[in-house]
Image (cartoon, rainbow, N blue to C red; front, top):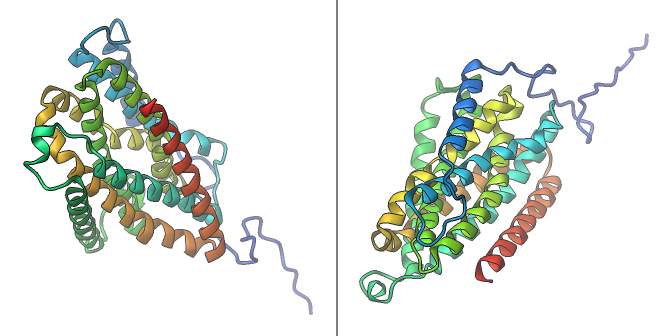
Length: 319
């Protein structure tokens, strides 16, 4: 007696049978997501300043709008996944490894930026060095994210849309660290507009952050799309994670001297939280869905690519 062995189209490349983590049919788009995206589009049009490029001293509307554009650009991170509608667990693992590499690179960038924040000379003697404040922020960020994860682990009934259990907790952690990151980026936008050459530097920093935010949106999308979350909703989550940028840019512009001393702490805080999620959540998930070699190679390539992009942006800022 013989038994036919059918080949599973979702079979793992290493021979393991991996069932898809999402349905074969795309999830429906909620009407609430469509309406919210319409509001975002309307707000983008209505609040556009005239002229778009600041002439002389930037207005509060210019500072708000450039921060808003950096936030909206985060939603573009979902575009690469539009062409991969159905991901089995192996490719979900690949996506997590890519996101982890990007987040580790972003953490490194946050730490280095925190250590080299330029302060007014009369303020530098009133506070601990930027290195100490960045390290302090990183420690606080680690404590905060570990405490948050512990809290989420004790609440199995947490749901994010159609996500529940471990998937919901991981999505919340990624969303949280990206949102924390956005607070410090918003302060950076406001401070740049409030500098001596605010019109030119503020516009460039905002444009650089807009480019930088696209892969961060991808990091959020890869935790949501494989879990039956529609593309529009994933894009909205990405945009919402960056909403603190315009909200913090305006007060930072108005009160530059107050915000600068706290910027290293904020950058370190976001970097510490982001590093923990990348190393302890996304990389572990990627390893479980693929293997050690694949996870190491993909995350390393992603990390190096993100660092090259960040170095290019930094070179342009110094030019």
